[in-house]
Length: 144
Image 1 (cartoon, rainbow, N blue to C red):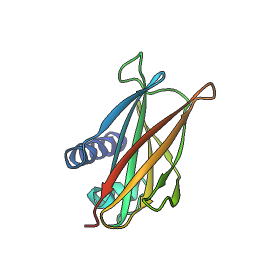
Image 2 (cartoon, helix red, strand yellow):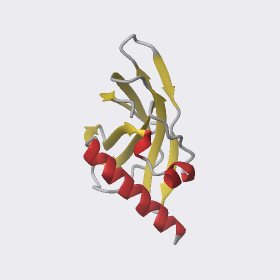
Image 3 (cartoon, one colour):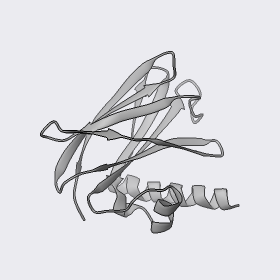
């Protein structure tokens, strides 16, 4: 019951953040990769605590979900997600992703610092031991 409640809280929070910063998806090789980056203050306090995330006006949260493209809705098995962000001065921050498994859902969460009105570029590598694919996107963040 607690896992179901946690999953529902996370999904509702992510749905809220999707409307604030639309979730996007991209097909990369055998995967459909859904990604979202948002200000961590949009997380509910209990969710941040449960997933060991910090809330701050200058801290972004990334959520990456890797699905098997040939089986819609099914998580890809045994992938590693790594990456970094780069600010406009080409300064890099390594992203430390934590894998979260709740029932059939598998997603990867990381956090990164930013300054107000800063656009970060993200370079995310997905590796299953056989192949690697790189997701690239950018996002502007506001401190609130």
